Length: 293
Image 1 (cartoon, rainbow, N blue to C red):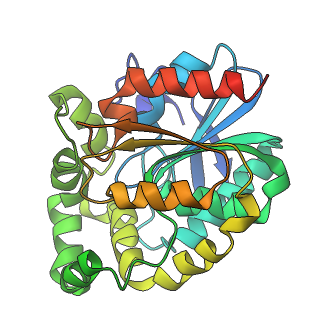
Image 2 (image 1 turned 180 degrees about the vertical axis):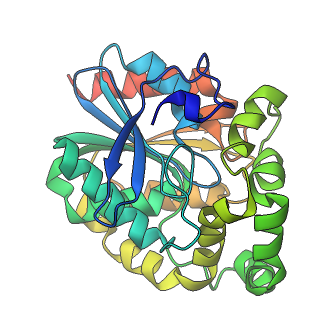
């Protein structure tokens, strides 16, 4: 599908050629595939898409092959009204993409829901994953944490899908509200809201919200398997003013790995790759060079 199919797309900020994989059910999965060299695979969360890694892809693609997908329901991928939008299905889609492109010895770079989705692959195929980079995410059952117990009535409310679908609540309200000291410029903010042009195309974000309520056992199962990758080199890049994945989550990840490097962005919120793009690129580049030598 040509970029002209998305008249709202800022091709200056996001100058990548479009690629599509037809999934087994016929759904079209969009992905970026830029550069040559060791493979970096970027896995986004909600309500984002590969756009939020654009600056890191542009900076790293001269030396690395940068692959970044848009989950079904997000970005430039298909957004069927009726689909299995659970993270388990997104993890299967990711595995299809990796097999289709024959990606080997890859570095996984994950954020938000991209954490459990991408790390699910790493836990099952640890030998094919060379390094991990984790930005503000989680990988465990949070259902007994006080913050989740407080949030549960909101997640269970029938009003939540309504505001997500009809008010585009996730990219319009939650995303800008997740930032720390900086804010989204209007032109950039449009690149996050425009992919969800009508209510029928907003079920991907609804699916992730529902997953917080219904898929906690799956997250817990993944956490039990973390020892499979505990010896992998890992870089943890963390916005310390994150209301969704707080510093306690960073400390939990730090304890789970034997070779963890940690970078804390003190004034940053939930999306360091957007809010601290240049610094994230710098630390990524240093980590990748160190772990390649």
